Length: 150
Image (cartoon, rainbow, N blue to C red; front, side):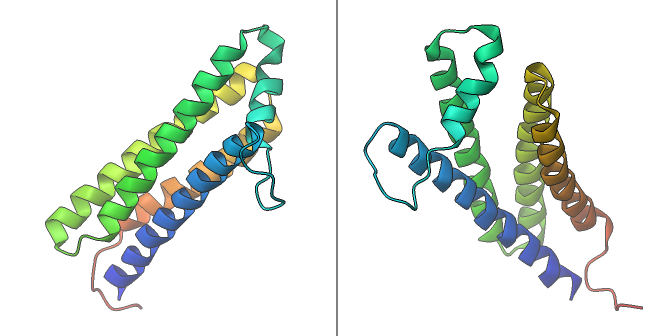
């Protein structure tokens, strides 16, 4: 029973990261004017530019960081999908651990970035999301498989 629940958690994060990736790609395309649909809001890139404005950086820095976010989201998505598609236990747990370790490291970068731009509301949001992911990672590694619920 617990093993199935753990697999559901991994599938959830695969879907969550795919949605995060999709919204960043679509938002970037909307920002560039390639998409003009109401379902393609252009929020994240302008927010990144506004957040970095206190440092008076060239626009190329914002573009680079946004592409890094998309790249890391793509890797996180792929790692979770790859883990979710694996059924053999030793391979499954190794792939799950890799997916969580990579994406949790990505959250740590967000925490540092939030501190640099002194946006503590955003930091709180990232802490909640990253903390939830860490909690799920711990559950997968601490709760034994196939033990009856008490």
